[in-house]
Image (cartoon, rainbow, N blue to C red):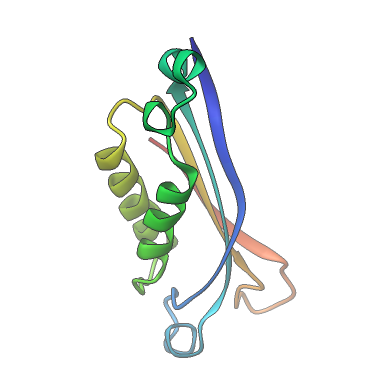
Length: 117
């Protein structure tokens, strides 16, 4: 049996962006994560070791969000690599990083980068 595990609405203050001011002052970001996962063992055992640990995934995402980058694509790629290395049994996954109020020369609520891996 397979299922989906999601962590949505993770909020971070981070220092990503092409502009020097973004890297100096930081901005607010929201990260959403979803992946397919084999549930058969967890359905039988009721043990955390048989599934994806949400808090461990959050810690991996937080660690990569703390490393400043110019491009959200780069951040998403680092997060994907870290999660895939920790959970090789994971199926197809998705990560979206949203920058709130991006500096685009006019009003904009958010800009997002999504990666399927």
